Length: 142
Image (cartoon, rainbow, N blue to C red; front, side, top):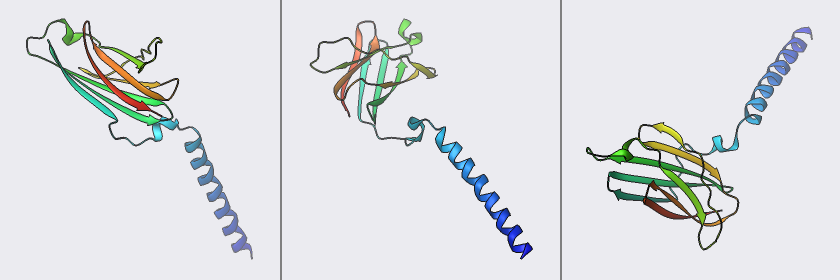
């Protein structure tokens, strides 16, 4: 009887330890971190600028969360745009309101990422560019 009771107490202790570990891990996760590492692209555009090419990919992650990935490939003789940070602006299509300019995070040279939670679902346009040259792409946020 003593050996069975000891085994039961030991098994119960291990189960509680594992349960607390799993609960703590799941509880502290940011829901955006649980999204697939490679979600499918919702919209994309590639635009030729005077100093290079800009590729923009939009990922509508759900819950009005959107990620924009930007890559600028400067020409070999590119001017000032090669070292500049692009301007990003989200605006609702057919709405007359100020846009949203999320902060950009530099991933590597010429590659930026922005995560934003849009204030409402609907049809949006994101503009990305330098000075007077912009690439624009529309997408649905739900």
